[in-house]
Length: 233
Length: 334
Image 1 (cartoon, helix red, strand yellow):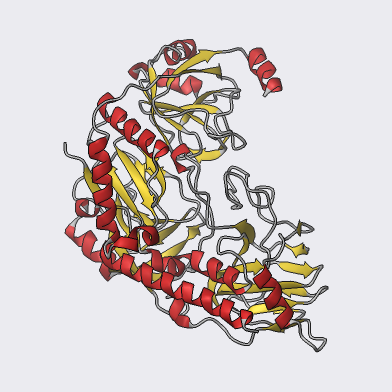
Image 2: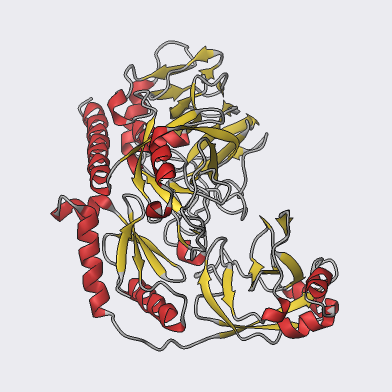
């Protein structure tokens, strides 16, 4: 598919690089993101990468210096950038281990996930720790990873009624997705465990432990291991 | 120094937002009404993005422990100093020991209190904005409480000149500048209530009726509205066919439509990405109109092109620059 541009209001443009989530699409989003990190155009305020799109927020005043049509001008400049950054680029893939204390008060829905799929809670843990996970996107909440690659055998629909507050660092399942809530938010995911690792680190640069393209490995840890970990956090 | 006697409903320190971190899922936060915030700052000689206090519906009671130069812009919540009412959209000198309080809301729902020097709070990720949910930024990451004390940064030279000029020679608790901002600068001030909307990326996926209704019917702001977004109620909007969309970026003013058909306008504390279809996007120049709308208010929408919205934005920026120049000239020339 051709790259398309469409306005997100009067101060942003959505660059759609493909219409399906594939490894190629993900690579194109990453290529573009790293271009913007390395060579931010003077009129760019920031960008938000997603599954199939990169949205660029721009400063109308800066763009309008040489034109009466800021939106058109930004699209032209983006077109020039895109034609210069065509092609794949290999990114060093990081693998990040997420230790998880499954079940108990940390994972109140582990039993439900097991029952829904006709298996035992231990099987849920085995299957959850065996997935081939890649982060497709960071979004929704600070450092929240949208993760692909969860085995279908433990897929479970969202709760009928969302919880008002899910504690930070809780690991959840929603349909075929899995993820970790970096901060306390409301949410409807099925909660299966908690990690002692902080995903959102506002004092650091970057403030997110995880990035799109990272591989994830979930490892089951005991409550004791979890508690000791937290002391060092 | 300012001492908070009563905190009000929701009073938070904000600036123009936390930019550059949305790629990490960190929300932008910032003021709901950027125009009122910027003008409030200009009136006291601050930079436009200096931190202000965003005051919502029920205002705080604030004791000034030092002489100060302030302004109050945005929604009119009947401000008074030592019981004497003060005007909105003006530069005001406040004498040490005076108390600022608020009363009934006359118009809008958010007032911006700027103070010469700006509020002194640590910057987190290049911004002073309060991100309530993550408990970072602003004043200890939270809304103000009774007994909090707010400090200010050093004043600019311009602020000092303005302050000097406004010290009253009587024993009044305050003195003001004697002129206000013209209503041409903000649609909110001129009483305009139709909000201009640029059709969204998924506009074409909606039924013909929905596309017409958005611009024909009026929508009420529901009580389930906050800094993250306003839920609207009115003619339901629906897609021609159910679609499973791939999540993508959202912005300040995005109008998204969940399956229940009631549109949600995303505001300052919006999430960075979303998967609901976006039927439209509010033009930047009309953000004050939505930011100042309160539960129960009725809104109507008018279609505008990106090009026209950008021209209006440039005109508004031009007006703000003229105001900035005007304030400078007035006080530099004595």
